[in-house]
Length: 109
Image 1 (tube, helix red, strand yellow):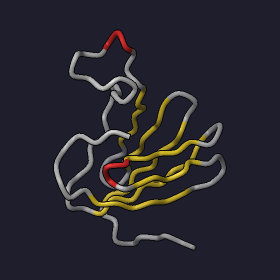
Image 2 (cartoon, helix red, strand yellow):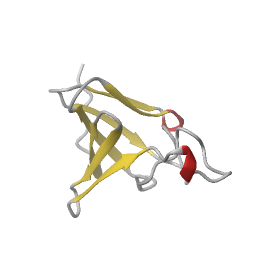
Image 3 (tube, rainbow, N blue to C red):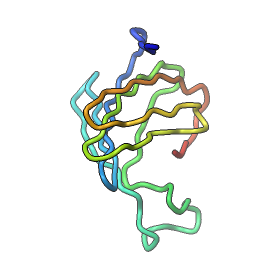
């Protein structure tokens, strides 16, 4: 079964690492960054423990987004349950998933 999308306006490459995720936006300008979980000492009272990261990924609304996932070490799973997306990141493989955000907000996964 192949889930392929030629309609996606935005493509994000996501790489699972041992303790963090690496992101690449390559559609417009080459933007690359890593996201690490915030340590408990850096959290405010309003923060969500184990979900808050130092660099959040920003995505557009009402636009089909394609994510391409892979991993550099072991199996990982990139998921945002509120958006109905989960894509496994497997070393040596490139997996793909698509979704659309239809409401504004901050989504955790």
